Image 1: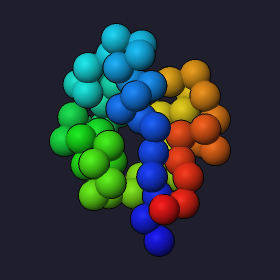
Image 2: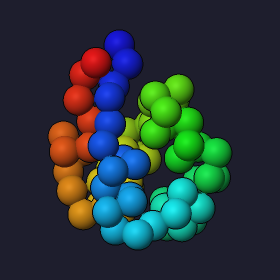
Image 3: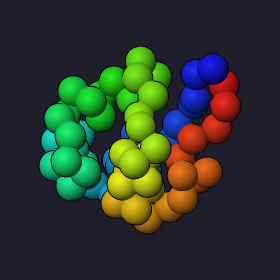
Image 4: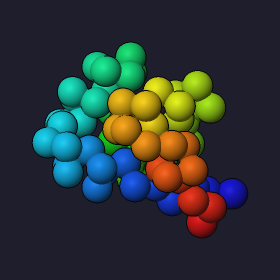
Length: 65
């Protein structure tokens, strides 16, 4: 099951580039791009890092497709 996400909208609302978000979460910019485009589902640990960095919860970031 694929997950839809709000990462791009939250990232842009906070004025972060993909590279900046990637660095804050310890991954590559390409990983962030793949997640935003629903081509890759992050690990649970990365989902929590993304949520913490973007100031939301995992449930606030991801919804089942």
